[in-house]
Amino acid sequence: MWAWWVGTLQDPTRVGVVAAWFTGGAAIVGVVISAVVSTIVSRRSVYINAVTVERSKWIETLRVTISKFSAAADRVVTLRQAQAVEYLKSVEWATDTQELHRLMSDLTLRLNPTEHEALNLLMAAKKLDAAARLHSSAAVILADEIMVRHAQWVLKAEWERVKQEAAGRLQAPKFWFRGWRRRRAYKKFLLGAGALERLDAIGAGKSDIDLTLLRSELDGL
Image: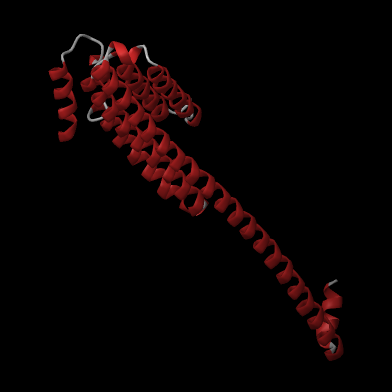
């Protein structure tokens, strides 16, 4: 083989042919590599766009569900306290509580049952549901505030997933660091504005003044 290469390089007519082979081969390899890279990039782009669109829809739908659930709870407690017996015996009560139940089911089905943040959001939502049906407006306001604050963390986490999927693997270290910082911040949140222990005051014999003070504490956190 070595002798063949030496002979080829010493023969001007054969050198041109070999050079043409290499040039043609390199061109073919270049075309193949370009096609493969283009296909990979195209598929990834389609995947990212599809996932981003679906996650964006999910985020918006979850936000709307939480907003409607909050409004439904406020409606139930307001009418229950204003009309008392009449409202509790009316078709309107049945319709309103049925809507509460539907929104609660919708929220439950949209959240990941294995994620800590989602479970905390559900806990606050269930407390809000009970407060609307059984307790005072002060209890509803407290539960609603805590639910909304937990919902913000869940929604933000989903946006971070969208950004990470769109960024690609090369950005993985950056997002790992951001995730680490976020986990630390969430632990701090659970000890402050997101402390679920405040929900225990609802239905525990606390006065509306006590519940209002608990809600007011959140404004400074």
